[in-house]
Length: 234
Image (cartoon, rainbow, N blue to C red; front, side, top):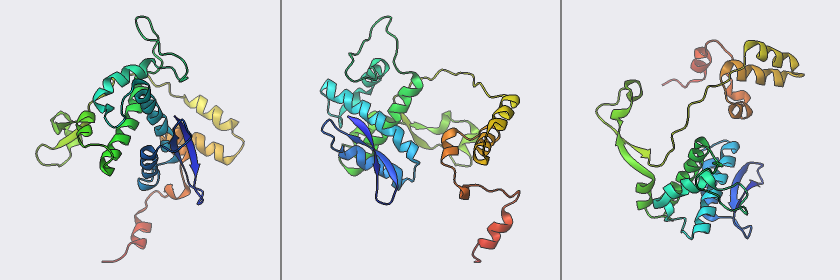
């Protein structure tokens, strides 16, 4: 199993999953195409999901499980993820004193991709609906803060992921103003200077800056006049 980039004749790209025979894995390919084009997600997003699917399918293959029904044993998959090496040919070494290979944040990211694959397969009818009850539990909104509830009347039910590790809180080492200015002065073109300014002052993540388009930028102090000029009168 491996992830693989696909370039369409239109020039658009997305990432898919190939099996050991270098054949496209149909369920994963259908879901990843839906994420990339149906939900209009960034290419970098579809690049991260295939890795999660590959790990899940590799675990199912090695343990003799059907990927359509292994959702009931995701807890064991999480233990395998924690200690399984990145090289598929290396043995899994677990037990007292073993050093984890993946941290909590990485494991949660893999679980997100697996839930997306199985949920989409349920929607298309390839996987039984009972799988959703193994991935999510129905909870109420009573545990949410008042600010998150908004103006929704009464209690609302929502789906909550059943499997998730507690990620340790870590301090963010933010670049100082002097470091940001030094980076800005070290840039040799306007594009690099803009990237430094967006990362330092706009609060954008590197992936957001990489996918930023000129049409996404609103450089006016007040955009009400252009919006009213382009709106259609009722």
